[in-house]
Image 1 (cartoon, rainbow, N blue to C red):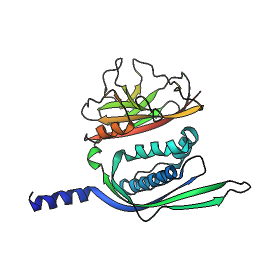
Image 2: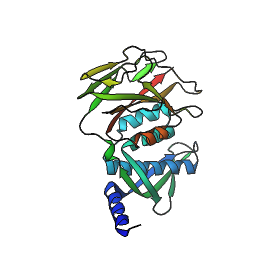
Image 3: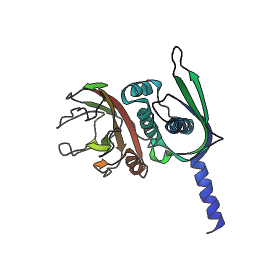
Image 4: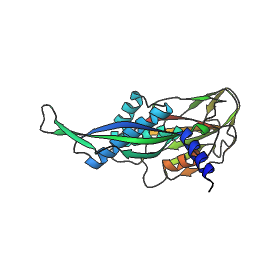
Length: 264
């Protein structure tokens, strides 16, 4: 291969990627292992790296609500996935050894442990995916739902666009985690023209509590993808990461995600 071509490829990659150093920590008790806690500490450090490079942050309110409902461990993994749509961790390497400290819980015989990890991560911005020529906003009729209640969606947009909506079930392990709910058989046309649009039109969106034991409430997500051309997405994806792999292959997209809680 021509050496000038090699240099050109390297320079292009460097322009899209940035290397940063961050630190993450995770506090835990005996409910999870040290390795699992340190894995979450690393995920926190990688999330900080993504936020540092792409400038996108997860609000403390979102994290607190998700932690209360879905469990702290699963919640942080879900948030890491969602925040990574505008960027990609190319590589992530620890700096030094992980640090484990502990302290006594006040008025208790138990101790809490803290795993702290420093990393150097290379983050690639997916700037080619984001189309700045249009924008849209989404609002759900409720934040919290009971079994069987109707879900309604209001959409504001500044130009005609094609819209696809996916329901993300992060707790699903055996079947599919991602289902396309719009367009569908009753609502096949996903070209939205007016500046204000509401769903459903010819269908009914009802919320159902999943078959999960030992939980009285659960978090789910709706993922909205807008584009100027119609994209033939799959009807379902086995894992959340599979949706991302399909998403990052496309250009000229914009997305919004909404989190909601279902109570028994």
